[in-house]
Amino acid sequence: MPVSTRAQALPPYIFARMEEDIDAIRRENRLVVDLGISDPDLPPPNGVAAALVQAVGQPGSYRYPPYGGIDELRQQVADWYRQRFAVNLDPTTEVLITGGSKEALIHVALATTDPKDAVLVPDPGYPAYHIPSALFDLEEISLPLRAANHFLPDWTEITPEQWKRIRLGYLNYPNNPTGVLAPDSLWQETIDLAARHGWTVVSDLAYVDIVYQGRARSIMEFPGAKDVALETLTFSKSYSMQGFRLGAVVGNAKILKAMYRVESQINAGVYVPIQTAGIEALKLGMQADVLSQYRARRDYVASQLATLGFHVSIPPATLYFWLPMAPGVTGTQFCRALLHKAGVALTPGAAFGPSSDRFVRLSLTEPLSLLSRAFESWHRALPIT
Image (cartoon, rainbow, N blue to C red):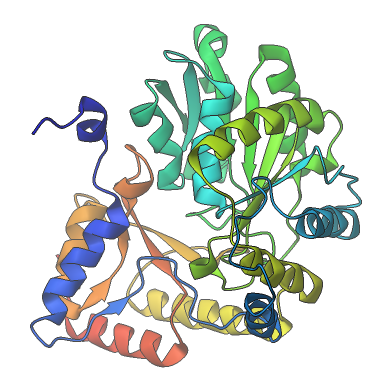
């Protein structure tokens, strides 16, 4: 049977491919500590599960939900923005509820671009940013985030001819995979560039609460943002609700109206009890002990990496270390060797961009007990390549 060229153009999703490799080793009865995928192990805030269970028992909970989200959750998102960032949002026109942020990051391209338009993708960046170009016949233009520039974009690398074609661009700070925060100047400069060249900025605010030094900013805090920008939220990282598949998009009302049309054609809305649990999560906020546990893991990993000879900065935010490879070694080679020799899974940098395979990403979403076992095995397996 025929297979579409569109499907063939999609690369295998890196985390699905890693899962297959890990399963193969586990079938040999070997322990694998997975520090590759970012799958938080800590439970949601107390009260979230109870809110979900109670909502499931309500009459009519099994019926179709509103396509754009229930009014109560949209209002709660707007309240959260007002309390957190002093940003006022209209919950009816400037907030949309989605099945997690990943699908929103992809579907936004259907609302903002036409075939042959260009999309600006950070390198390194979350792998989902690459999907629209493969699925929707878009040109992908790389936005390099270089270590020498503190993993911030240098807009002078985008040529005047490229600006003419760009209709959509992604930014993500606190940043996955590098762990850095963005200065205020970046947000205002980005808004001004988007207004000048006529493209939509999508700020991916997935790690808003996982900040150890400094604070995360919303692009919506800055003048002109609502004219050119959207921002995505996820309940996966702050509230460990990744299996719930719940997110939100806020910002420009015109683009959100177009996104609503797209979402209503593709999806049937998010299960109402899950949205009810999301309301409770936003009211409770990320628990302080969760951040303290991630901080303890971060500090432990930093000390262990130093003993292994890595020279890395301790990340001020997110759940990741972005590790540079030794000369002559790619991240793909290193990850494969570490998995087979030590039973430790990391993510090769190539998953995050075509110019990033001189790095690997290490995730902090396993307890200290497993982190300790991982580094003991890592030390015993030296040298890795």
